[in-house]
Length: 200
Image (cartoon, rainbow, N blue to C red; front, side):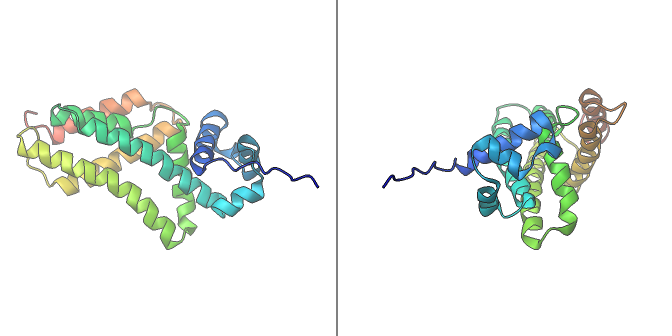
């Protein structure tokens, strides 16, 4: 009797990396369980066993991508630089690279699907957003204490700045005519100069 060898399933992180690569190369509409299964050598049934649904796959992929961005954000914010320089780095990391930026494409889809998401999925999205917010509040508070920034309410200012960045970033990610990354960064620098910088 011949024993059939089972091909081990790839590590979950490899599946999430492959999903992100597919979004970057082919767009979100091409990311199906069957297509992803072919990419990683698994059946779509096996993927559904691991992820339960495409919604869960997308959220897990976003969490994986955010984990990588979170590490990069921590490194940028830990640099020995002025608070203003680190704030510029934070903004640069936040804003999409351009039209169809895969990370932002994924965010837009998760936001769209969140209308019907359960409490657990909403909590997980809130946790991702909360990490960005907490880091920004801490950076603002540091800049205020050093006299680089005006004495604003750091939490309220962070909420408003992130709302501005979200709105402008969506325009970049969807390719709205007349809005690109360079323009968004310029708008943001102008806003910061007018509302936050101590010497403005």
